[in-house]
Length: 298
Picture 1 (spheres, helix red, strand yellow):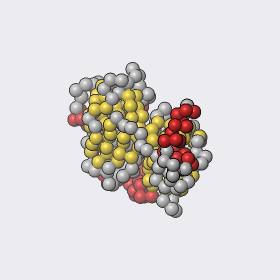
Picture 2 (picture 1 turned 90 degrees about the vertical axis):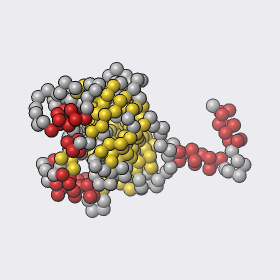
Picture 3 (picture 1 turned 180 degrees about the horizontal axis):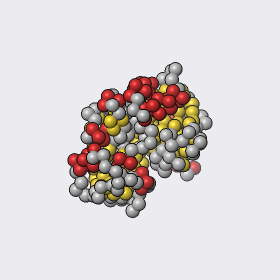
Picture 4 (picture 1 turned 120 degrees about the vertical axis):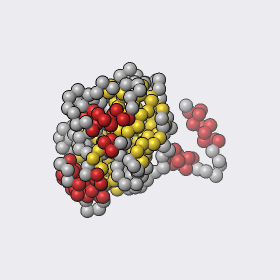
């Protein structure tokens, strides 16, 4: 290792100090944090000395975690109050929350990937499955390269899905919200080969309670939400097969109707290379009905 490092320094231009090379390497390194979600609190490991820019995020504990940035004069208490009111159908509260909050992404428990903190300042880590929250303070930004990805999933105005039609069963995908109006999040739910989006939409809108439809399989995963114009990368490991991509974010301009109910559905195939069970928790799939894949909070 010492020989490699020495060779690298010798190969560097003579007019470039070694410290400059080290600074570039430091800037390129992606910082990493671990978020642990508990019923009463959220803790973050690795946040000391955090800079704005791309960071690796891993979530552990009892639920999903998301990172948000609030406008001046609006804070977590306001957001929590508005989110609770929105969950009861108050569209004015939902619109106020979205107008004052930039949601930068997040992951379910056991999930990981990268998120971009756009500027220096305070960020809030929250979970609809915890009574607590955490505050991160990021310093001046650094430039870090985006990781290689195996494909992309893109939320678009409509709302509709764009991006890849196939992905490997294990890898990393880019999730981008190209919509100009509302947030989106990704739900990947395995279905029986040959299932159509019309079948899924009919099941969603039937209003029937009881066991899930025969075409729904246990495997699945979801991501945190992204505000318009934001993107993140998501690591995943799922069984090969056919999946439906869904978003259940409530649309404030459609009286809170979840986007999937509006037809935001797309079929995608995951190829070989995943594990038998996958890292997606089966409990994130279909515990009761097809609509149970919608996460708490939104």
